[in-house]
Each structure stands twice: as C-alpha cells, then as structure tokens.
Length: 191
Ligand code: SF4
Ligand code: SF4
Image (cartoon, rainbow, N blue to C red):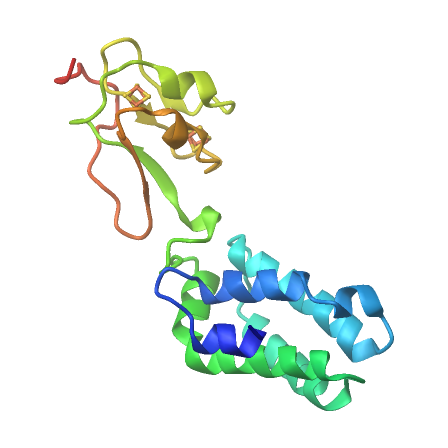
C-alpha cells in the first residue's frame, strides 16, 4: 500500500505522525541519493517527524514540512519523492489537529507514541508481589510486599517492561486521561 493510501485509510488505533515517520524512514530515497530533494527532503522529514513523535516537536515544524514537501513534489527526480511529499501534505491537511496535539505536548490521540504515554498501577488490582520492581531498570517503582506499588512518573522512561511483567494486569498505560492511583504505597486490599 502506498504512503498516501495508508494516510487515507488510517485507523483510529494508528497515529498519523508515527505512520509517516515509519514510512519515511523505510523509504528507498534514504538509500538512493540521486536527487537532492529526494534524499535531503526525506532525511529532513525523518528528523522532524521523529522529533514530533518523541515530544520534541517545534511550532515551526508544520510550515517547514509543508515547504519541503512542495519542493519534493516538484523537484524530485522520481515518483517516490513526489509521492511522499503528497502524502505528508495530505496528512497535514487532514490531521492537523493531531500534529498540533503532539507539537503542543498535549498527547497522541491514538495512544501510539510512547513518549506521550504514562504507566500507572491500579490499587484494586495490585497484590504487592513486587514483580514489576524486579524488571524496572530505572528504579521508578515504589512499594514493598503486600503494599500497592506506585510508579514515580518523573523517574519512568515509559519502557513498558513492568506492564509485561505484571500477571495481575494491574499496570495500565494512559494517554491524556489518567486513572486515579495512590501517590504513595498503601496496604493491598487484594491478597
Ligand atoms: S503492579 Fe503487578 S507486578 Fe507490581 S506489585 Fe502489583 S501485582 Fe505485582
Ligand atoms: S514503564 Fe519502564 S521505567 Fe516506567 S515504571 Fe515501568 S518498568 Fe519502570
């Protein structure tokens, strides 16, 4: 499926910025180098889109990508550069709000971009087993045996290892809406 078709058929579980970012980085222009606008354009797009997904987007990014893509459409030597330029312009026109939410650090609507997610431990599910603490290399989880564990958001790097380790499904990933969780470890109700 072409990049443009992917953008036109984007599912609600897919993020437009992430989809473009992956498409651009897997594109043959980045290996070819026969034309400046294909190679340089794609390299620049890769950097800008990557930054947006990593919560490092800037207010000038959309205008810069639009200018770049118009040039790619008219100056690339083959259809590939032209197609990508058209796909990115279509994506910005159709999903401008999603781009702005990423750039404004508000969130990723599809809950795909890792840097926009946070991890939380639900008090009514946690048994205080400590398995999550064992896998967290950043020591971001507070707790002791039979106490509801708590993730310290400022220490968490959103790797997701704790969520995979928890057999009680007590750890959830959240976008803009966060679940209510204790701020400090409290005795477990579940055993
Ligand atoms: S969150 Fe899951 S893995 Fe961590 S202590 Fe609670 S039940 Fe155990
Ligand atoms: S997501 Fe990763 S860094 Fe954050 S608490 Fe879980 S294991 Fe630790």
